[in-house]
Length: 272
Image (tube, rainbow, N blue to C red; front, side, top):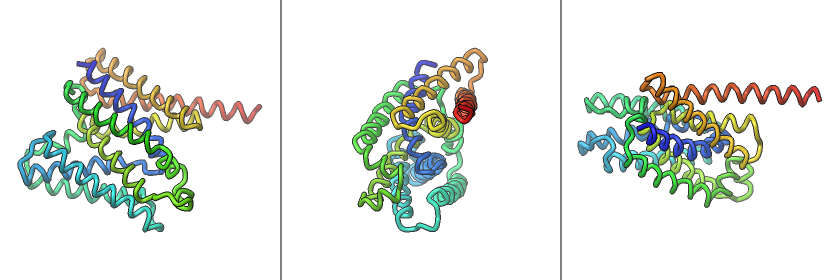
């Protein structure tokens, strides 16, 4: 059982570790909880309109449709509205989506998406879930690789990319849409807390310890893997079924260690 959980963690750590580097550079830290909440609204609407159960194809279709709409919205807002930061827009959209989800839940008693979004089901993940997440994450990873140049250019500097004639609206839409696919699937497996930790903490550790893209990716993947192994082992021996929070805590410990090492390196360089 833990073997499937570990495979799921590896898959999430790989795709979210890479995506997190983009997220940090773009300064859209809370994109995951916003997209997850918006996907939840789509799932609840599917349940209300068509009595679609959680995890069904129709539920996913509605979730992805909502994600695509908000991806287009984020891309257009960042291009057209310059006096409000995209992070503020993301925060506002999250608040509105959360309020909408709570309202819709009142109309759809028994819908469990919000609880699952928070806690996930990492310990009870099935083989089918792992296979489908592998297919989806591989497709997203292939897109990230194929379109790495324009996506990285925008992540490095939005204004420079715009000045160079890059079609920023289109590439931003693609980035947010790909993020939406990953986050929608990952949150249903592991919960929003673990997904947020996988997205932000390995990327932050890599930013503290390296500057090149290649080095950051390797560090992010290593941190995610070590934290997954440590978290699953601790959860097993402590007989604690809250695997997700343990993994997130291990990621936090690694971040503290990286911060200390980075500070020591800076002190050594200043003294040298």
